[in-house]
Length: 87
View 1 (tube, rainbow, N blue to C red):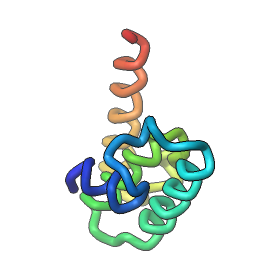
View 2: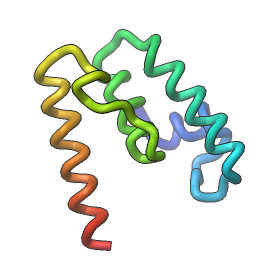
View 3: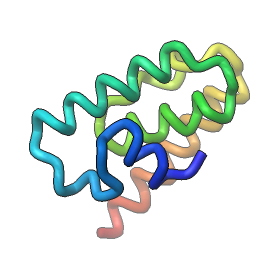
């Protein structure tokens, strides 16, 4: 999934930083619904990553049933957290 396409589809913009809090919450809600109904693993992970980036991702242990997906999500969250510590 293309991040710009996801942003445009769910948030109405490719620049999420420009959204007011209400628009951000509405976009998160749409992504959350899509995440809950998506069955394809790669698309689910991409949607989870968007939720993680906007501060609303469920814990990987609850978000994913497959242990490999749980591990990948934990590693992704850890890597993003480490990258954010450098800012």
